[in-house]
Image (tube, rainbow, N blue to C red):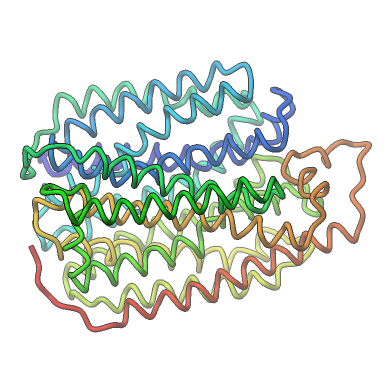
Length: 473
């Protein structure tokens, strides 16, 4: 096999597994809650620790990969992710599962921060968008497949099986990457910017933590303190980066117009769609639809199919014509899909929802590969690792804020005790009956989420229309 296809295959498996495990737990949350007897707060931490940790350290790991080798750290990430998966499968308490999900998240951060840079190093400029399209397709595809696959495994083999499947694939892919991948990127042996790494990761984590949990009506002082300290750490980080000789964060990248416009678009896109699978999962398994985990996953298959069809096609067209209008078209198509979903009813059939789901999936596919390729083409080769990490950090931060936005809307439209019952799955008990007013409030909150998502998606078109330079590396 040509080396470039070995690279693409292995990195796609890595990003697929890492993205799949972001959402595969969502579909199994009610089962996990009942089996481990977890509180609502612990249940949310099982989901959020993966997102928060990955988003906080991605940039650090991308910078380290430029210094020590992208392939080397990518291999370590695969091994760490596989280890974390094995530990998750034997968790006996909710707290143990949170700890082992943290290990998984660290491995996933190595995979996310290096896969794009490794592909960019391997493929020539005229093939990059197509290759990155296939790789980026695996990220969103994994998020949706996680719901279907997770629903199937949870229904027939129990929730622990959602982690078992990572073990044989992870072991094989770790050995494969270690023996076959080779370093093609430019490595710069520089001193580690410990202060920059620490202040950035700590600041971002505290802000995401505060924003996410502000909607759970926890102690307001603690939430405010977390956000304020987080912002102060990021301010300190910027001051440090301007003074050190070898900064972790290359601020000069933000002088590249195409780089900054692409990352603004990718952040807004993630903010709009980040919580889509979460909200759809709870709608389909919620008090009105009451589907089991397997059928809920099947409902979301059209998103995966549309994404799989349009992502490589969009990448191929971008490679051929270099028209950035593809990103705007993708965002517009997704926005239309979200607008249609604002009319979703108390119950809906598979065929009644298929059109907007296809539009959302197709829009994601059309947008992702041209946008990521234009970002990576705009930066110098020695900065591809940190550039890829910056873009993926914007995605993760947008996704985390998106989840916070969902809880903010629900916290204002649904009583807290009802929200706990919705997310823990306790309403599924045969002896439990949720009032019609709560169901109506739940549906209104979903309509509000989709409407705001559509608006943000439309706004994200603006950066993609701004004139940009055409310097390509």
